[in-house]
Length: 383
Image (cartoon, rainbow, N blue to C red; front, top):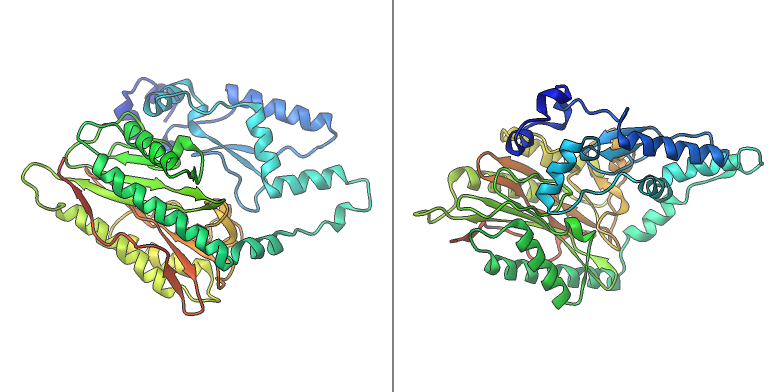
């Protein structure tokens, strides 16, 4: 599609469009001006490397790929307005400072720039990445570290239980998210990732799922409400997803479509967890869950099955993921004793919402054990 085809659509119609259908490009946009400013600043420092910039669904740099992906909604004013209306605030600005931060924070880009800086010295070719050592150190948790993660998960479970009791028909996602922030303050814990999207609260089929925050969408009967939330306790994180279903008038249980989605998700989690043994690759585990979801007739989820968890929500090196370019070699790394992983397949249930469960597990000599109690049944809200 070209911009003229969608720029005047209603919010509801625009939300039905895929990003790939919008024909978005960075050229001739305000974002492109910031990219060019970044390149000029690199030139001024005699750094000839200009990292390619592309449109993506969020800020990220693919593992092992020296490129920057910029959130799609920053590229067009119509999309910025939509993002603003859904989040209740201004979308993240496309500032040159943000682009600089991406370069500084990403190891691959930083390494390239360092080599550029040292190109006329005898040291440029002597650089050796400490990534394997750092990944091993951060990945293999000590008993004390595991105890902090366990406590973070315990607090997260308590916050979820109180939130379910708090939810009422007509509440907005934002109101629910603000209540969860209050509970985190009451427990004197931090959030596992930035507050704007921690928690994610998605009520019903029209709420955009991903690394975005709660919106003004209201809870209605027949909605699946999906949560993605984690806290930080004494510098260690939890990362857990849960769902609830809001009963319609006369319903005593979730409809068959919702139950089938939940059972499929739970099966994918349990079968992949059972296969997690020391020495197997993360990719081999991802394949198990991914095939279960696809074979059940649901679309393939566009993210890894799971990641490591520790001082940050996405920690360590090995990944339970597909062999996609953006994940580099992480899915080929092997599972080790002491590593903590999330397991988080997801799927849509048309007309109801998103079924995304996320459980945290620890690797032992015998396999992967749940940390905390997993969600085994659909939580029902009478409204």
